Amino acid sequence: MPFRLLTRPSLHMLLAIVFGTLLGVFSPGLAVEMKPLSDGFILVIGWLMPLMMFLLVVSGVSGLQAGQRGLPSRLVAYFVLMKLLSLLMGCVIAVLMQPGAGHAPGMTVLASAWTVPPLTGLPSSADFSWRASASTLLLALKQNPILPVMIAAVLTGALMAKTRSRRSVEAVRGTAETIVKGLFSGMRLILRFAPIAAFGAIAFAIGRFGLASALPLLKFVAVMYLACGAFIVLVFMPIARASGLSLWSLLRYLKDELLLVTFTGSSVAALPGLIEKMQALGCDRQLTRLVLTTGYTFNLSGSDIYLIVAVLFLAQLSGVHLTGTELLTLLLISLVTSLGSTSMAGSAFITLIATLHLLQVVPLEGAGLLLGVERLMKCRVLTNVLGNCVACLAIARWQQGPAFQPDPDSR
Image 1 (spheres, helix red, strand yellow):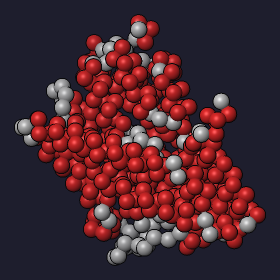
Image 2 (cartoon, rainbow, N blue to C red; image 1 turned 120 degrees about the vertical axis):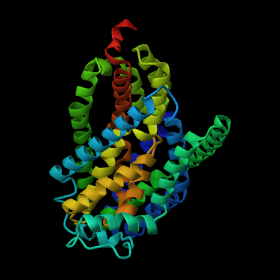
Image 3 (cartoon, rainbow, N blue to C red; image 1 turned 90 degrees about the vertical axis):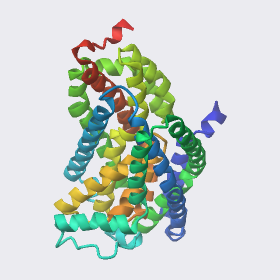
Image 4 (cartoon, one colour; image 1 turned 180 degrees about the vertical axis):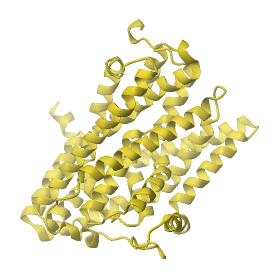
């Protein structure tokens, strides 16, 4: 038992935070030199990101076209609505709660400590307008490889879905899935070094700005739980009720799978059990498989909330003020980059890097600070899983009408 405890990634992350904090307190000069550990981790993830996002989006979009009549369009409509609502919820909560404000003196120089070359020709905040906002997106499209990759992936997936030769399409999708599995294996290997990156980020922050610099991270975690809780109550609860089942009944029905997700941190591990239970509730077999599998890429409300809250947290921590139009641009960019999120561990962090790189107004490498609290983001994965189960109920009710009457007690 003690040996198994020593192999737990959460313990490794906790030790990394503790040692990074101690180094920052007792040897600030040496702690500042640890910054490359975090920067290198982010750089390696950036190398794998474009290909992984392309393959995942291609597979997801091409798969959305299969199924019952009218199901793909309803699925897309529901996922887009949930994505918009979750991004808006995260934005509102982060703006109201200001998790990065009131930080330790000197933390405003974070922007100068971690810098990213700005996009050439980017308009200033003073003359930001809708035309300037469109220019920002065009500049991002021209000067950054991520957004064109995602647009190309969506178009490729749509073309594959319209191809008459289904055998060829399935062969291509099979090859893509094989490559994705290989990339996932590589990413899991890289994520083993996350504690080292967290150690470097925490040591640098505390060595450079003092022990009080850890306080904003705790505020960030608290605001994330608040935002996810608010989304579950204000959005999932009425949708579940309108679908014929109270959210509390659904939570009790899925308690085993939700506990598995909580203690393992893997939403994929619960997928077989979720499919079985949602089918037992009365959801159509094909509908359930399509909603849950595509939802693990396109319907991740918790990851979307994290994306917006994290960007605004880093902006506030860096003393960067975003105007109303810049916030709308952030929402638009996040709507696109969040298409690359998956249920894979670390995917939300990868999407955050992509968004920061496109936005170009918040320090990119500052995201390394958030690695220290990555293991505390249970609210994010639980919101993702619960959101896909609610989506199953909602789309089944939309597809089957009043005849759909879910009853967990009849199982």
